[in-house]
Structure formats: C-alpha cells, structure tokens
Image 1: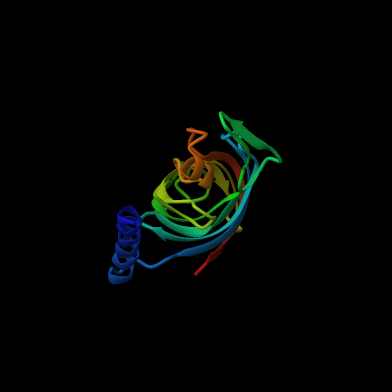
Image 2: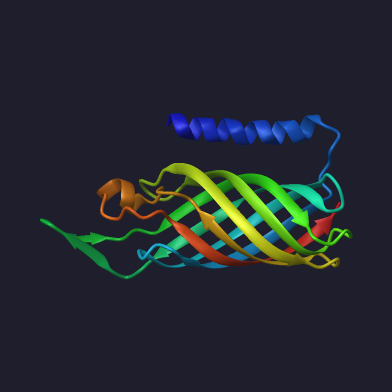
Length: 184
C-alpha cells in the first residue's frame, strides 16, 4: 500500500504543478488502443485514454494522461505441481502518466516521439499498483487526428503473478493508438 500512496502522491503533485503555473493545456485528446500483449497469459489488450497536452514550444510538450486498459486472458488454465486448473484472470488497470512529446517538424505536427512514465493502478482482483512506462512513435495531423504505436509496460502487477506466483513475466503490450485532439 505504501507504493500506491507514493504513486498517487506523485501524480497529484504533477497535476498540481500544472494548475499552479501559467502553462495551460493547449489540446485535449481522446483515444483508443488495441494491443498485442507481450505476456503469454493474455490474448489481446484494449483501452481508452484522455490526454491533456501542455505545449512548452511548438515542438516540445508535456502530456498528462489517464484512461483504462484491459488485458483479456487466454482461454486456458495452469497446472503446476500439485496445483491443477488455476484459471488465468483478466488484468485491468488505470494508468496515470506524464512525460515529454517531441515533434520532429517545427510546425508542431507530423512525426513525433513520446516517452511517458507513471503508475498503473490495478483494478482487477488481486492486481497491484506498479510503475508504468510507455515509449511511443506517432504521427499527428494538423486537423487533430493522431496515430501512434507504443510499447507500454506495467511490470508485474497482474493478479496471476501475485496471487499464484506461476508466471514471472512482466505485463506489457505493443499497441496501436488512434486519437483525436481538440485545440483549446
């Protein structure tokens, strides 16, 4: 519980910092993603997000995002040692993250690279709050459409790992994200 309090306090501090400075969000984006999990326990991952983008310059901005991600378990069970038929549960979390987004074009649209870090607050049964990181490459059109491919890793926060200790792999996904940004 101590780590989740630290993550929540860190996220609250970042949000408070932006509300107390003169920087204001220039864009609000709403997106959806579909991903291929990097852990064999899951067949597909899907999620939605909301992102505020604070432009420091035309090329550099600070995104703050939250949403919901869900990993769908494969239809299988584990049999390890004397324990048989352990069902693989779904894994879901609420990400709270911030980072830097850099546009390679001086106009502030086109190809960009983004790196985000934060916390994944586990909401499925027995899941934990973990550190999250997500590097992204994407393309943003001047009309607001945004298409990106990202790798998002939430560490070892899934319920199967902590409840049963059968799979020591971290949970991540390679995802395609499509979004639309609204200028404020």
